[in-house]
Image (cartoon, rainbow, N blue to C red):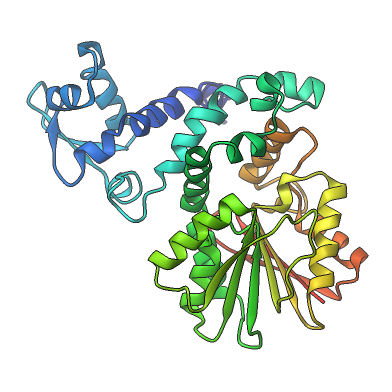
Length: 340
C-alpha cells in the first residue's frame, strides 16, 4: 500500500529556494568565474566578493542541486562546473542561456510575488504597476535594457528555432519574413540551413538596429535583411512564409486575431503562417510550462494568454487558412503551422 506523503507539496511549495540559489549564482557570475577550471570555496568567495557566511553553504547547495561538482571535502575541496552549467551558464560559451535567467531574476522573480493579486484583479504586476508604462514601453526606452532582454530571449529560443529550421519543409518556398524578429536570430538560423531562402526580420526600429548589427557580424547580410515594422499599424511584408516566434501569446484575443489576419493577407496561396510557442496541450493537462507561461502573460500584460494548438487552428480557419498542423520542437515548445 502506497503511503501518502506531503513531499511533492513541500517540493513545489518551496521551489523558490532552489530557484533563487541558481538565479543568484547566475547573477553573481559564479559559473563563468569557474569556467573550465576548479576553485576552492575561499577562492570563489574572494573572486565574487561574498561574505564568509556564504562559504561553504552556497557552493555546497549548488553541489547538492547538481549545478556544481566538488572534488574532496572541507576547506581545500575544489568546485567545478557540471557538463550542463559549463555549456549553458558560462558566459564565454556560445550556448550561454544565462541572459534569460538574469532577466528572470531581475524582473520576473519579484513580479511573480504578486501572482495572487494578478489572479484577483486580472491586472499586470510588472513595471506598469509602478510607473504606468507598459513592459515594452519600458524596454524600448532603454536601449541597453532592450538588447539585454532580446539576448535573453535569444538564449532560450535558440533550441526551438534550430529545431524549426531543421524540421519545417522549406523546399517549395523562396522568402520568409519573421515578424517581431528581434535580433534576427530565427531568420539567420533558417538562412544558414536553407541557402536558397531570402529572409527578412521585421520589428520596431530600435530592434531593427540591433538585428542589422548582428546579421552583419554573422556574415549573412546578402540573404538576411532587417526592416522596421509596427505590426499593428503597418501591413506585414509579403513573403512565402511568415513566422512569429513567441509573439502571439503577448496579446489579447482581439490583437491575436489582427495578427493572424495580417499574416493571411501577406501570404500567397499555399503560403505558410508559423507561430513558435509553448503550445498548451489541447486537454490542458500536461504542458505545465506552457500553462505557467500563460500565467506569466497575466503578470506581464493582464489580458494576454498562451493557447492550445486547437485554439490556434480554430482562429486560423476562421480567418480563411485551409489547413493546420503542429510540429513538436524542443521541450515544451511547438510550431503551429497554418497554410493559406
